[in-house]
Length: 250
Image (cartoon, rainbow, N blue to C red):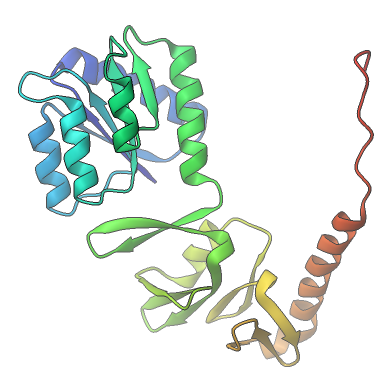
């Protein structure tokens, strides 16, 4: 689920953007939560209290603060999420680079521009990453950095390629459904493995870092076949010659 904060001192503008978000997320089948703020201070205190937002939409000109100043304070606090400015002028465009802003939504809002901006922003956030709650913030772990996930009692442990681990308070079946990519294989009731990091196959999987991942014994043949089919598919695609380019006449 995307968590999006809209910070604008105009109730009309907040409602307008909220309506656009509702329509956009419905169109793109994106699960989201929108939290409105009427001041930068209110947003700032929420973030300081541990609230996380994947996207923060900030009005540049507010009654008691400038959006650029709020953005700078968020970055000083190491907020790594996406910041979008909404404004009627590009006067602060140069300063937006200082806070790593992802772009502008210009007033009066255009639906076409809103969609293009949100497509770019949400793709960068959602494609190939998995959100993990880490203390008071949410981080997005790239699929390519996930070695395997193991179930331990009422929680799961996500193992990353660099040796870092994250505790996730979900059932492994739920994580399996959320990690919607062909490289992940549920090979045991307690293990979900990224097949890209399997280095040898026996009665268990041995991974590139030396860890061993169990294979469900009664399904040993089927699970090993699923792995070999995945690897064969990668090899087949790598050997496939590129399609010839079409000329201008098609």
